Image (spheres, rainbow, N blue to C red):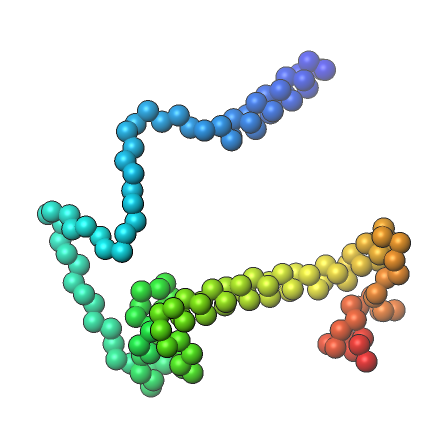
Length: 146
């Protein structure tokens, strides 16, 4: 019995380590470099330039903003307040939106987790718990800050 357990442990250790080993590939590789312009390939048809509609796809009663060219995924011309004047503004706002969305997801998960684990964490750190008598986090929505 001990032998089978030790064999199983050795095999699991070996297979776990092999997952991180580099793959040896004897095939020739070529370097791929990114550039602003793609080099034309002979024999390949050239894609026609797509004409963007004058009106926004998301809000058909508004004109499409100049910065929204359809080059970014999900771009359907939605900027009703005209925040993005340039492509750089659009990319900056897009990155800010992703950062704020990630923070909101953490907050949405953190609130219930704080109510579940507050007493345990506080007792482990020799602190007093912050939850009220009904085990709710003190916040404006719970009426606990007033």
